[in-house]
Amino acid sequence: MGLLCKLLGWVPRHEEIVARILGNEHAHLLTQAIGLAEIGIAAWILSGILPRWCGALGLSVAGLFPRRVGLKVFLREKELH
Image (cartoon, rainbow, N blue to C red; front, side, top):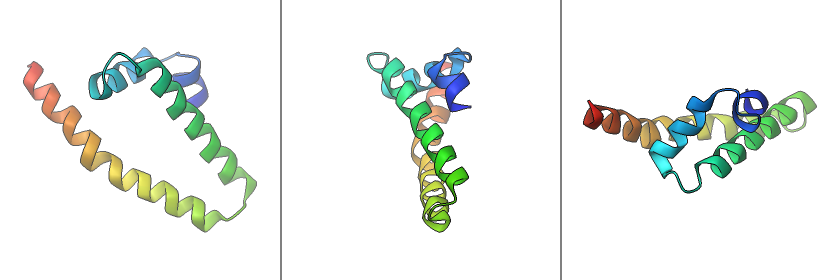
């Protein structure tokens, strides 16, 4: 998903979400950075190196993201409607 949706821009909605949360100024660059991070995690998983650390990192990021960013998106969506 990181390569197609974020780095190659096949799903513009991803960059729009980043722009809504973090602003338009750096949305493209940040979307690409997120895509690179996703590709890096995928490569780490496939490598089989330190899988518990990889899992812990993934769970930590997933655990923090919805509370902080998801709430912001939800509240901004309510303000727009």
